[in-house]
Amino acid sequence: MRATASLYAFLIVALPSAQLNAQDGYKIYISVDMEGVVGVVSSDHLGPSGFEYSKAREWMTAEVNAAIEGARAAGATEFVISDSHGNGENLLIDRLPADVTLIRSWPRPLMMMEGIDETFDAVIFIGYHSSTNNPTGVRAHTFSSGRLAGIYLNGTAMPEAGINAAIAGHFGVPVIMISGDDAALEETRKLIGEIEGAVVKQAISYQSARTLMPGVAYNLIREKVTSAVGRIGDFDSYVLETPITLDLVFKNYRPSEMLAYLPIVERTDSHSIRFMGRDMVEISKFLEFVLTYDASLSP
Image (cartoon, rainbow, N blue to C red; front, side, top):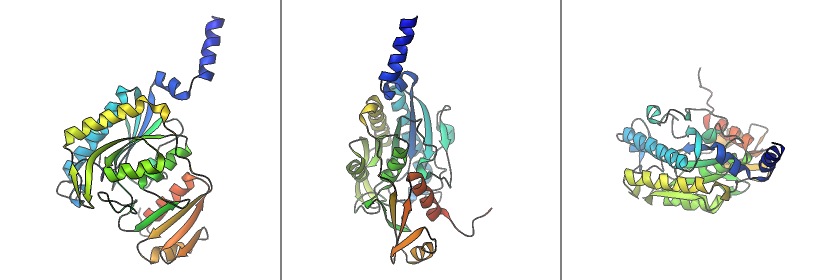
C-alpha cells in the first residue's frame, strides 16, 4: 500500500497538468461570435431586425454544438459557453446540451471572456472575424464597427481574438482553435500562433463571401476541435508584458475629448486615447466601460 501511495504521489508531481486533467476530463471555454459563422455575410444576419437573423442563430448554435461534440470526442467533459455577439442573447438556449453553462447579455467585466479563470484547460473561438485594421474579412471590426478605428495593446493592433486570447493568457489558459473566415484565421495565427482553424467561408468583401454549406461547416469544426483538444499540451498561452498599454482610436472626435477628462486617460491625438492597465483584467474592465457607459442608462 505504501508503494502504491508513493507512486501516486510521484505521478501527481511529475505528470504535466494536461495529462492529469485528461483523466478527469478537460474543462473548455467557448467564446462565440456571429460574423464568422457559416453563411453570415451582412446585417440581414446580425440582429433581430434582419430577415435571416433567425437562421443565423440556428447556424451559430449548431456550430457551438459541433465544437462541443468535437471536444467531447477528445476527452472534454465540462463547458462554459459565452454568447458574445450583439445583445449577447443569440444562441438558442434550448438547443444546447443540458450540462453546459451559458453566459448571456451585457455588461461583463471580462467582456467576451466572462467566466474564464485558471481552472480551464483551453479556449475555443467560434464564429470570429478579422479586425478593424484588416483590409479584408467579412464584417471586419474590433468590438464596435461604428465607433472604433483601432485597438492596440503594447503597440500591436488587435483583433477581438487577440484581446480575448490575452485575457485567457492572464489566467494561463491557451487558445487552441478558431473558426471563421480565412482572413480571421490568418490574422489570429500571425498574432498568437498556429492554432487549429476551421475556415467556414472565404471572404470576398466586407459583406460577401464564398461559403460552405452548414452541414459541411459543422463537420469541419467538429474535426478541428477534436484535433485541437487531442493535442492540448502543444499550445501556449498568449501572455502580454505588464503593465499593458491600451491605445484606442475612435472614428469620431468627441469620445477622445470627453474620456481625456478622466485622470487615468491620456489623449494622444484628436481621435485617440491611452490607458495603462496593470493587467488584462483592468484593460478589459476599461474597455467595457468605454463601450457600454451611457449617462442615460437605467435602471
